[in-house]
Image (cartoon, rainbow, N blue to C red; front, side, top):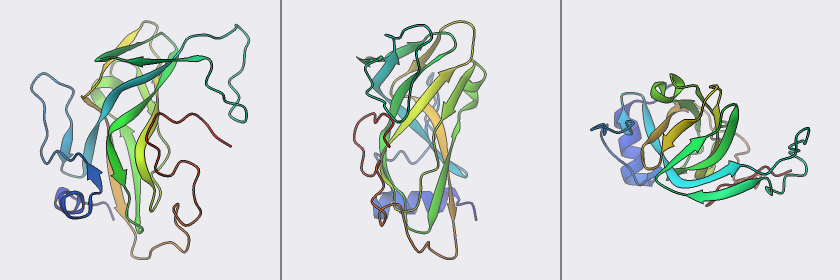
Length: 184
């Protein structure tokens, strides 16, 4: 079942599920973030990996991803070139409980500007900063703002915990602290 704000608040405050945790929606001229009725709007950190050095006809290979086509940028905002993407990470650190699966969905403010957010599900007992691909599908650059909302996490809890969690199988993205490129 989908989990409400009261459950998210309790899990964050008592069990460190989200750190730092903002217990209400913050707006005031910002892309909103914080606790909502059935989710948590997390922020994007001020660290970005911008795709910049690539050859026409080149290939990004997930089995041989060295990240050399990306430049690290630390700034209060990031402009994503048309029809391109950047890698970024959440400002918040997440610890997903064993009986929970969390889905990440982009925010409408950015969606209306052509931004598509790609994040895989946050599996039971995964923890770390969320690495995301922020895709600009627009024909012009789009700016995203660090320390402001980028996406919403929705939490689903099962009556039965899994036999094997992400932590049990020693997942390759467990406890990531930086923007983590593709691994095989």
